[in-house]
Image (cartoon, rainbow, N blue to C red; front, side, top):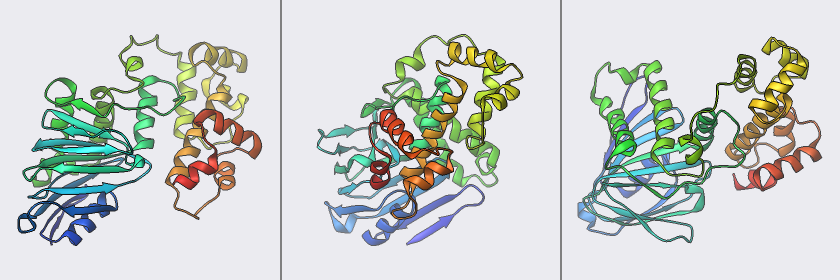
Length: 328
């Protein structure tokens, strides 16, 4: 297997005729998977290029022949954009959906994915997206915490409009591997591109919060409210109380409470709890089996009463904390 690696921004390129080496390369950047060569074994030739951009893994792949794949990986989303050829994806027991050069696929690997009908000429952009990173970006765009995780339609148009723009940005990030001392090798630029791709996929796809994103922007929140929200988002584990939040806002406790109820729909301390719940869920979903307990994570994020924490968590996410941890 031929492997090339880049500099500060992590670029990797693999070329191999070995199914085992292909599996190793894909698992290193994406998921452990089952890979079966369905076409001519003599034509099998994997070409994989990957760039790591924080919460995203961007790559393109081709196999030179027909293949089948299946995998499951909780905690991430996946977008596949065929540049040439086509393939189908089935999520769980759902119907198969075809991706083509005009139609990208958006799927959740936590639902058990099966890829069939991968054509011999198929060349696909493949983007793994950390769920917590995308949810955080969605919260930033909405200006409020998510009440529930978004649900995404399985496909979106990449032949025009925002879908095409997004796919072209993905392609550009991969072309940068051949640019010596290119812009993407600068952390400031790669960080901005990560943010743009996260923001862009929310504007290119159809999902349960799309109407909220397309709605007219509400009046800007008062500076005092924004100060507190920014502080809590930056340092969610700090021991906040009403007085400290009011000091951050540079207003009285009563003024801050009224402003939060009017502009956020909850009290300042309820907002702190909401942000922490999101972090608890993200940590539980990302934890390796046996590496932690629900109590340890809850205490770490300031939830001292486990019974109240568990009830609130179940009401918020529709499952118990232990169910989330077991799924991880």
